[in-house]
Image (tube, rainbow, N blue to C red; front, side, top):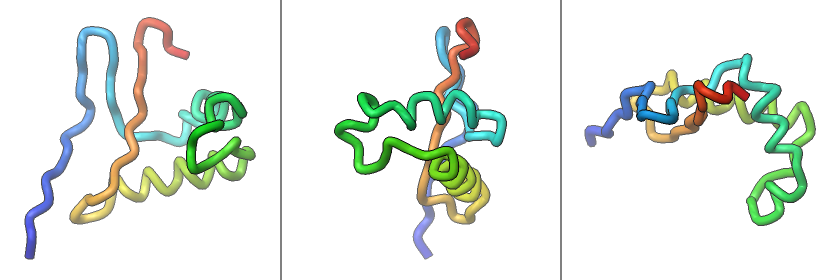
Length: 82
């Protein structure tokens, strides 16, 4: 069996926190994921509310997988606190 590296979250820098997605990230995630200009060059979107909920649920499931081979990371600015 191949060992897969595991990213230990959260990762904190002076200005940002990279962490696992949580259900309460819905409002902030949907704000950017539903914006046509943000999604313009992405493979997804613009998202409906259901699309965003499904994406967050999928990324939360990735965090629990063993071994974890897919990652979805929330970028959190503690100063702005979206």
